[in-house]
Amino acid sequence: MGIRRPRTIFLLILVLIAVSRVPAVAQADLSGEWFPVAHEDREVDRRGGAAIGDYTGLPINDAARTRADNYDASVFALPEWQCRPHGVDFIPLGLSEMRIWKDTDPVTQQFTAWRMHWLRSADDRAIYMDGRPHPPEYAAHTWEGFSTGTWEGNMLRITTTHMKEDYLRRNGISRSSMAHISELLFVHGDYLTWTTIIYDPAYLTEPMIRNASYTRLPTQQMPAYPCPVIVEEVRPKGSVPHYLPGKNPYLTEFAQKAGIPFELTRGGAETIYPEYQAKIKAILQKAATK
Amino acid sequence: MSRGLNRAIVAFISMFVLAVCAQAQDGEIHFWPVHGNVYMVVGAGANITISVGKDGVLMVDSGTAQASDKVIAAIQQFTHQRDPLGPELPVRYIINTSIDADHTGGNAKIAASSIFKPLEGGEKIIAHDNVLLRMQDAGKEFPENAQPTDAYQTEQYKLNRFFNGEGVQVIHMPAAHTDGDSVVWFRFSDVISTGDIFTDHYPIIDLQRGGSIQGTIEALNRIIDLVYPEFRVQGGTMLIPGHGRLSDLTDIAYYRDMVTIVRDRVQDMIKNGKTLEQVQTAKLTVDFDPVYGRTPGSAQRFVEQVYRSLSEKR
Image (tube, rainbow over all chains, first blue to last red):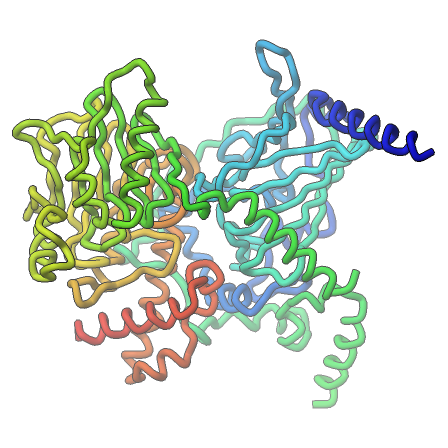
């Protein structure tokens, strides 16, 4: 036994080394044309977008809340922002068609990466499966970020760094460029489930998790999506739309329309957990007695 | 999962990713390809930009004095590795984007080294005239061999010949970080070295050296006007900031937005008769601090500089 155990460990190490050097192979075939399945978040994250001041269910900190409070959507009319795409962690929610295909090394024919393109992508997204390292921090950040993937059974786990700053919710809730994300992709039949876990040391106090779904649509033909920049609004050169602290007139609109106290709209990690229901009841009772 | 555990996971994963990515903090000099002949050099204090090619090496900024030996050795090694059978590539020019010691500290040593071989009749160390004047005023801090040999007084300065196949344009940005700021535009590679007008932290507005918040915003907007994105605010003209990562239009637009918004907030409080102390207490940068104010005290310093810049203007 005393002799066998080291041998077993040695053999195990050899197997692990061998496995780690096996070229990336797909445990599930992601390639093809995918169409988004509208889900419960569609009205908040898509269509008209989230209401100003609706931070419910977001594990944000005070800095994120303050930034959103002073946000003016007119900033999107600035030439610099007119053609911005969704960032890598928002685009799966974007209800736009998507294509996935395989990249292979032309010489070795080894599978190197999954490539993805959404209707409104800036560039094709690559998920490198060949074990390459992430670039140094001083490399450029992009809307797609830099992604590497590994298979865990039939689940593809993607780790992404080097993302540009983007919105977590399209009402001014921001995610910083210091963030990184994990994505978990499962194919089951003709459906693809896409879970995104966002870690942002700047604006989140806890990981933020959200899901999207797609269904195969082999006949889909994705159109081009050009984006011309035009003068949408004439304003003094150099001005950047925003509200001064405490001057956003629309901040309480969501609470008023939903008929709930303002403090229930402010988000924060506690609003994710079931225990928060008791607090909601207490706040509503307090409001009713006023 | 408990909230405490969640926070611990966030902290652990963030530390892991930072450790993976923070390869520039290792005390070594790193070269990162940008476009064409242009590279970003990281690890010498401020970012250095170099153009490397058949004509030799052009440096935009020279890093700190302490890092200059490493910079010289690293450039020699890099140019040799890039073309082992080619001729030795000397440094032909140094362009300073401002007077700051982390941008000009290497001037003297590099200019005195064997790798510095200016072209006959060509420029040597180029900067705006205000950099030279302020260096001369400062006395011993900037020895004569660290000072610009070719100071320009005009709105812009074009290098007197193509270098490595492209025009190199030096543009003065008046009263921004200082009154001697230049950005350097590599016209064919389409890379702009911005100096400290654009960084990864709150702007340092050096009021003593003629900097101003309004000039900083105007300079940022002028750079934005020069930038041509490839598609969807991304790629195209690349920006090498004074500090921080390689950037493009999105990054500088976010930065410009932040600087403008903070300016507007401080301006509003001044308009309402608030004192500097009241402005500081109002925590006007709380929403941007996690991104641009990670150095302790930097947010307070920035707000004070904005306040004083706007107050003096009045």
